[in-house]
Image (cartoon, rainbow, N blue to C red):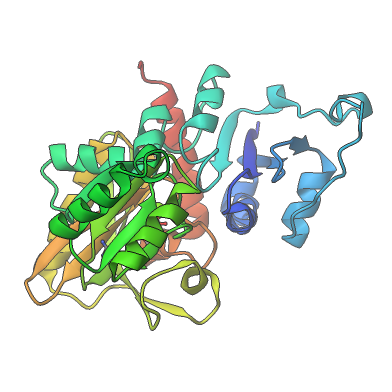
Length: 356
Ligand code: ADP
Ligand code: MG
Ligand code: MG
């Protein structure tokens, strides 16, 4: 009998479109020759407004790659009446293909855990720690992983009290200096991130970040190469070949990430074997430090002038399109895209079978 895979995609986040691209690639991989007899795909599409759809509409989104917006019918409750209410019971294993808040952050993982079915990727804790850059950095620090200097800020220090704000800026200038990076703690795809080179830019950056999140992180800026490593597994995770991202823009911002031709990757990265080993070891440590499961991509800063390797972040559901770094780094190690997807489902089953 075939296993029915509940492919959950779209979602209430700025990375809705990326999720659709990832889901298309994963659906194709599940239908590939080596997987077709094992798996059947049941797509569930979460609209930008948060409504879940199953049946033919999600199939249509997968086929076209375009989001669908359905007008809210006033006074009419969901699509249950038309027989379109998502049939959760038909699913054997969930595959949440969601990036960013409300999907990669433990919220959906909590729901799936309550449903008592296996699901691909990290659980509630791993997802939440992987999403919140402040909590993530605390977990990394505890594991002894080197990282940039940073200051955690609450929105109230920016917006609520006009006496506190100048002191906060003074502290950031004295501790981190310029340039510094100001980030909403719980986002991805560089959304809401600014590089501040002066007091005026710092003030504007803090105000902007506060519009995205209650929790904000400010980091010392480094001049570094950006290296990435894919991790696969549960309690004994493996690290992939290391890749490098290069681009012309000032930093790896949203536009650079998603405009064709603005960023390049090289796999393997042209760095020494010693740096590769160090990164692979740190990637596995980072994975374990946040209690990730299944998959994660761990990103690093390599400061060539000093030889230092700093951890930047972990992404518990990295971009998963055919051209994304995560599957490409595994391809370099001989694991094809369909095989990777198959392994992730097997890891979900393995983890579900464990206690706790
Ligand atoms: P996201 O989770 O949105 O990808 P990141 O923390 O990875 O956020 O930051 C996005 C990009 O901003 C990085 O890939 C890098 O180009 C730049 N960046 C972030 N923090 C720093 C830093 N401390 N020093 C230098 N560049 C940084
Ligand atoms: Mg990220
Ligand atoms: Mg990043």
